[in-house]
Length: 319
Image (tube, rainbow, N blue to C red):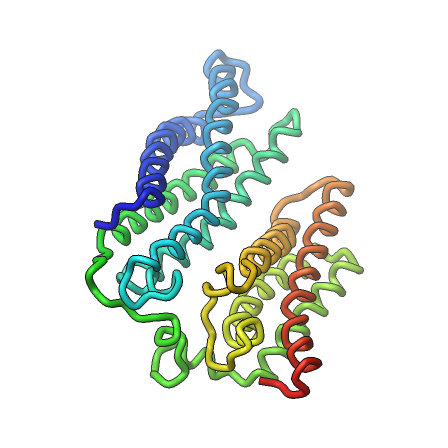
């Protein structure tokens, strides 16, 4: 088992989360089964009071989990220094069979946990608490994803052998083997870039027209295409190497930690874009979320577009 200060910190926090989340699960199930807004019994009054306490516990857990995602990525990058063969977090993720499923699950949970936080915030603004039972139903679903994430995380760290040589990111993200990643990296750049900018154009159109469902759908699609294009195309210009496709190396100091900005911009932009189609906000709140989403999505698009353009202006050729 790999034991570093960062891993121990994550493990201790996960244990605390598991305890609080289990308590919240018990009361969430109770509220979903027995709460009735129109009833005036002592049971309903007690359930309503309990809902505030449980929502606070869940809010603390999910807020911390969202923030800790960046710490998890930092931990993977830091661990790479003690694993033979690893040059960045990619080697750590690929060191065990649990790494890739864990990373995918963490990204999914990141959006689900953030969605619950926004849903809870909207519910607390309303006297009728229209989302009260629904938000606890969402939590029950999110709880099992949280438990699965903690289990995968523990198994990954437990399975890492610091004496075994792992693949470097150059090997993992190679175009010469027959893996799904190799096929992904072989997508024609013209097709990839066309899809990227066309989807962004649709986002712009939906933003202007204030079409919430189209805006939400396009942001979901943009999140996927943005990640694929970042690995397959834009990342190579950040590294200025046509064969370097790692989505982790630009989190390091050598590249001015630009990866953190890219991922944060992409998450904020796409999350607020997606959530507009899932929750009915007031007109003022909806406009604010439109602006936040479009601002950060645009910032991401400008930032990734800068690197190939700057490279071409500087060298007069494309990679």
